[in-house]
Structure formats: structure tokens, C-alpha cells
Length: 303
Length: 189
Image (cartoon, rainbow over all chains, first blue to last red):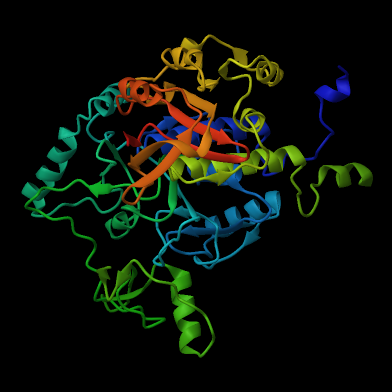
């Protein structure tokens, strides 16, 4: 045995930024997360050159998966061109040599803050959702040891109580984002603060989803073909946002999740939240060959 | 000074070394194997050593009943542990001894499901016992055949699994791998 056989040549940086031991730890936890869908697995959450709370959890999962042939798309509330998304995407390609894309259909790896693209993800694609607060029980149980025990007992009654109180007070369920959902009939997870519009996209999907919270140091997963059922009462059905009839003022596209833009006259204009879908629609209207893939929603209705 | 700053700037297009490329590809195969139970995924190299490289380091407690592989595992810095304390177990499930070890493998608990071990074993695909799988990762159901395994394995797995507690299994045949997470229900046909 020689020193040379125990050491490695000096490198300015590990491939994909994270060192090998960080990747191994993440790999072990990601496998456990897949094996128990929706169950939060603790992990070390290494330092990355970004402040916690800005997508470090998603970033670490993405960095572990990256290889030179990866094609990465990063979105922030549906937009590819926001500062956060653009910075993460350029960081990912700089440290790995992976290709960047805005096109949902071309991406092999999609890191997202709070949206799932409107075009259907296919088998082989991986969606990585950034999660600020992974614990669905936190509003009802701030003590995380007790919350863990509640998950172990599948004791989710108090989450239903919240929903019930909202109906009593407001006449409808007020959970706008991060709607608590039962995964594989066992663990309730928070699907990250995606709008209700996006929750059905996780149910029996073709793609693999990782959800990772860097600040809270927990990750969980939804494998393909896994049941994800929003918590509802049998007589009060789950409703997505009422965006089916809205039209995007830039692309003219109708029937998808919209951003509301307040206008000077007190009214609102709407634009597609999934910005690249809008770009594709505009290009198509201008006669360019740009393919829009199959979408989860058709004519504003879940297909 | 110029030379120093040149050294500190990473190459414009980073290239993974052989180890990184191999462990990344191994993990990708394992990830899809576990995500889609019953499908056959391809490892970059045959055998168990690739899995050891991709997953195991000095934070792990490993049980291994093959002395050659044990030496390889020890080289990663992992602690060699008895079966009852292992988080990763590389077992020979073609003999009754392997089954006795599997009986002691930690399954975690409802409180800490991540304490359930990862079990790796050799098997022969496409022959032997027919199994029907249902669960997450499987649209309806899928049938596979796994051979070269000791009888009683599936009864033991069923007896020791109490979801979300349980262990997750990888079966290796050459460069092929099949994953059976604890979430999969197995019907022995």
C-alpha cells in the first residue's frame, strides 16, 4: 500500500460541487425516501454557495444527480428567467457541464420552486421541488418530536380539523398552497408550496419527484405511479384554483394557472405562470415550429 | 500570481473522473430500480462492488457474508457490523445461512423508517419463483421471476415487513439490478 493509492489527484473542485461523501449520504437518503413515499428523511444538508431558504435542498439533490449528459431546467414560480432560477441553472451547468434548457419536454432534470410545469412530465424525467417547510403538521404541532410520533401513528386528525375550521369560518377550504396530501395511503406530506392546481399532477404520475428542504434538512420523494390524495371531506370535493376560464394577456392561451397582474384601473390582467409555455404558444402563433407537449389540463379541466 | 489564480479557477467544462461517473451511473440505476420495482436496470459494472462505492462510506455499518467483499467494504472506511446492527447488508440469499442473517437485519420502526436496512443479494432473473408485485412505482401490477434464492425468503420478508418499517432489497444478476422497496407488496405465485 502506498500513499498514492490512498489519495486522489488535486482538483480545483469536486465534479458537481458536492464532494463524494456528501453525494453518498444524499444517495442513501434518496433511496430510503423512494422506499417510503412521502416520509421525511433527515439528511445532513451541506453548505452550498447559496443561503439556506433559497433552494439549497433542491440544489443538493440536483447536484447529486447531475452528469454531463443531463439537461437541466430550473423554474421559479413557473418562470425560467427569474434571478433565482437563472442563477441556479447557470451554477448547475458551470459545475457539471450539463446543458441548460427552458423547454420542459427537453429537460431530464427539472428543479422547481413552487410550480410543476403545465406540460406532462414523462417517464425518465426527475422533478426536484424546493421545500421551505417540509412538515405538514407544524401548524398543529410545533414540537417536531411529537410530530414525528404523529406521523408514526398516522395521527392526522388535527389536519382535518384545520380544514374543517376553514370551512366553518370561511365557507371554503382556504389552503392556497402546500395543500396537505396523503401519499401511498400512509404518510401525509406537504407537496411544497405548489398551488392546489399542481397537486393532482403528482398523483399516479409518470415521473419521479424529489422534495428537499435544505434549511430543515429533510427530503422525501414521490415515486412514479404513487397515489397522492389531497386531504378532503367526502362531501366537500377538492377544488383547484378557478383559473380554467382565464386568458393570458400576452400569449392568448386559456385554461392554465395564471399570475394575476393588478392594473391601474383596479382590474386585473392575467399571464401564464408557466412562462415557457407562453413563449411556445407565442412562437407557434408566429408560425415557428415549436412543439407544445401534452398538458395535464385541457380546456381548463384536469385531463 | 497569474499561475495561482489559473489553478484555482475550475476548468471551463468540468468532467467527472471515472469514479464519479461510475458511482453516478450506479446510483441512477439503483434509483430507477427502486422507483419502478420489478424493472431491470443496468449497472455500469457487474457485481456488488459498484453499489459499495456509490453508497457506503465511514458513516455506514455494513454486514457482509462474503470475505472478499468485506475487504472491499473495509477499504471504504465503513464499520463491519453484525447483521442485527447493519444499515447495509450484502447477503448470499442462495443459502439458509443468508436467510438467518436476513432474519436479524434491522427494519427500523414507524418512528424511524430510515433505520430499515438496504439489503443486496445476487439472484438469477427470468427463472425460478414467479412473483406478482403491486405498490408505488407500478401502474397496475407486474410479474417477475427470481431464481437462485433460498425458499422461505418471501415469507420472511412478509413476516418482517410492517410498513413503513421494513428493509429494501436490490437483486443483482451480472450488470442487471432489480429493486424491491419495502412499499412493494409481493404475491408469491
